[in-house]
Length: 142
Ligand code: NI
Image (tube, rainbow, N blue to C red; front, side):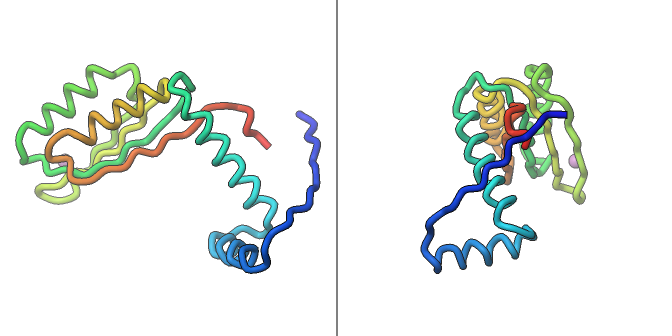
């Protein structure tokens, strides 16, 4: 088991700002400020790590499209085969007679999977989509 050194530190902050922070973290379900602050620090560190295009990363791409429109199904299929090394899995749900929901899990260098997500989202007739990137760095374990 890894020994952890826990440091306590004081923070000077305006009362109103702290009040707003407390309201926010209570609404999110945090039971204390420490865990909320640790999460903010981790988010910032991950965001900074993922600015490096060579950083190892995972990502999920969620999108909605109408499969009747143009050649979108073929284009999505071809692109995913071209990048099969970076696509861990694809889940496809037929929402109704026309619309599809697809969730693609990507793995690879941050720069590459961001570009791949952009390529997919910019395909004509993709109605809506969102890419969320996550770090695989191990130095955030606290
Ligand atoms: Ni479908």
